[in-house]
Amino acid sequence: MTRTARWAATLPAAVTATTALTAAPAYAETYSAYLRTAVSNLPVATEVRTGYDRSLFPHWIDADGDGCNTRNEVLIAEATTKPSVGFGCSLSGGRWYSYYDNAYWTVTSDLDIDHMVPLAEAWDSGARNWTTSRRQAFANDLGDSRPLVAVTDNVNQAKGDQDPATWMPPYSSARCRYINEWVATKIRWRLTVDASEKNALTSWANSCPNVTITVVRAF
Image (cartoon, rainbow, N blue to C red; front, side, top):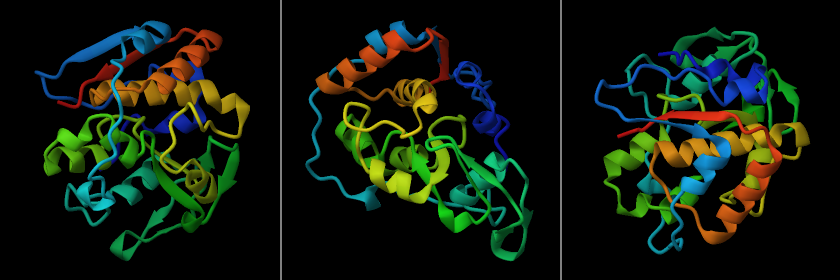
C-alpha cells in the first residue's frame, strides 16, 4: 500500500499544508481553516499521563497484508529515490530526506518513523479514553500524509514525547511546516492541547504563513 500524499518531504511548507489526502469514507468529516483559526479552535485541556504505556498503541502493523509494515510503508512512500523491495520487505538502494534537520540518508537504520504527535502526547491529550483499536489506528495512520514522517533517528530521539512548547525541529526552515502538520494531526484525531502548547502554537502561527489547513477527521 502506498499513500498518494507522502511526497510532502520534497515540497515547500505552504504546499504541504494543503497536500491532498488519500481516500476517506464518504461519511468522514472534513475540516478546513486558515492556520491561525485552526490553532485558535484547538480545545484546551489539562494533560493526564496516568496509565500511559507505549504498548497501548500497537504499531508497525501490516494492515494490508502485503508483507510491509507501517514503518516500511512510510519509507517506501517518502523515498526521494525509490528503494528496491526485497524478501520480507527489506529495502535497499533508496534515498530519504529528513526535513527536521535538512539531511539525506541512504540507509534505513539511520531513520526513525516519527509520530508527529508522539504516542505519550496523544495519550495525555485524549487517547487515554480511546479503545485499543483506535489507538492502533492512530499509531499506524497511513490515511493522511502528516501524522507519520521519516526523520533522522537521533533527531527523533531528541524530540521524544515533547510538544512545540519545548521542542522544534533544529532546521529553522522546517518549523512552519512542522507547526502545520502538528496542528493538522491534532485536528484529525480530535486531540486537545494544554495551555503552554496552545501559547506556543499561537505564537508560531502568528509568525508563519497563514496557509489553509485541510484535514479529513480520522473517525
